[in-house]
Image (cartoon, rainbow, N blue to C red; front, side, top):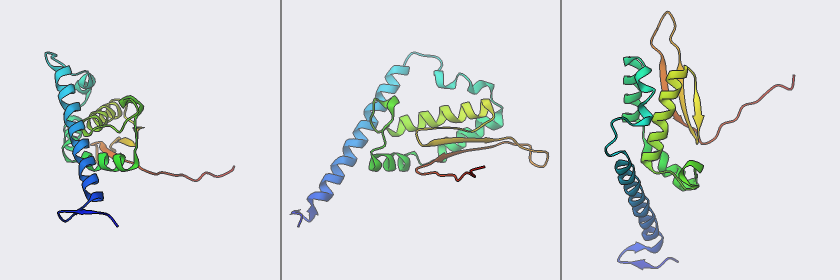
Length: 150
């Protein structure tokens, strides 16, 4: 039976500590990224974004605003899902958001779907009935397809 300290179990205290450490790590990464970009006039992530249409840029901005990156981070932390690009550790919320942004811009520029690290940027061209493209972002934990043996 877990020991209780002032009505809080040790397991609960450990979970709270892990959450606090994760949040501190996210803040340190954000500060590091901010300092790295100080004095630069253009973020390299946005290099290809200027080639997109206004509608594409707006849709990407909406996705980045509305997507629950914290939930993705929480799942990745729970699964101990690490990225090589983050030196074999679970990426921070800001790193996940940055990678999602890069994928969305690349998918829109290339007019295709692109996926890495569990994130999938979807781009589908419009048609004569609805000429605007569909742009979306997914976090995929598990995926499987069946194939015929033909």
